[in-house]
Image: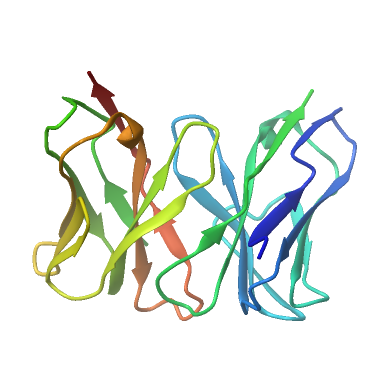
Length: 112
Length: 112
């Protein structure tokens, strides 16, 4: 099992450009999440999904959109990148609502 | 809303014991989780407490007191590889989507 994978691993964007981050999991998990992590801070939830075709806003959703067309994939889109979106983005998945979330390796995004 | 407090940094020598405290405020409490994150890596799950008391997993133990809105992670027989950030996270009972709120993290530095 690959677990949770994310592509790309690194990306540099110019202000105003758009991009999509892909998250894939092979554990048949219902729940998937996108977080961002800034230096010296914990993880903040951007958007999440409780099943195929469903998404919901988290703590910091502005400037991002998501889609979950297939159970195993969760896409995070930046419509018009801003320097404030420079961060490390982690995707996670879980089998149930409770306990353990499995995280991908992260995507390091820099917006110039 | 939710808020979590944990110390920003703890330093200890190899072989020592470290306790990382976490206090939280939630509108309704469901459980307290702990995650470990090495520099440049992804968070990994360590433990989960839904009920009062101590949970032991090898060298790591986690404690919860719901009446005090308090928990801690105990790291015993510290090893150099335990140098990492440790995050507590809570899930609000009022939140049916299973979202986790993370603390800002405690950097544990293990010295020889």
